[in-house]
Image 1 (cartoon, rainbow, N blue to C red):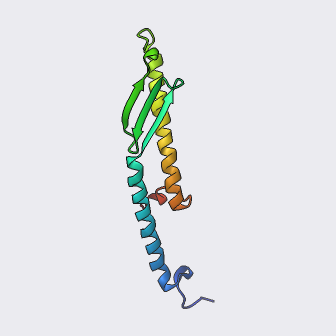
Image 2: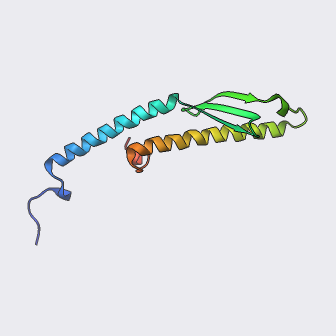
Image 3: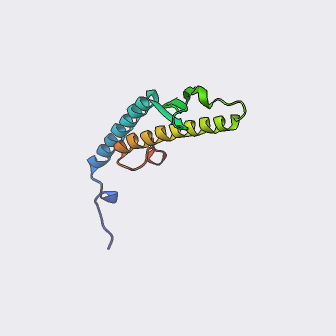
Length: 117
């Protein structure tokens, strides 16, 4: 027997409006958090601190510091490896912070909510 009346999916008339308001609120919180994350600075080091890298929330390298004792013209490859390691660690720190901050808003549904925002 076919069911008559009611609302598709069982949603009440005001339910869609409430859902839209919640989505808009979440989007605004995500935009604010994203803006806050962009101005944050992340620092990581490699080789026991002989190479230090700072990046911003946009994943742009803003500073690299290299201790004098690690600069060996005979072993440029080691210095390059230390720089790469420090940059990658700084990027991981930024990504972890971004995931954590956005996760607080989305409740673990993912930062982008499947591309909706």
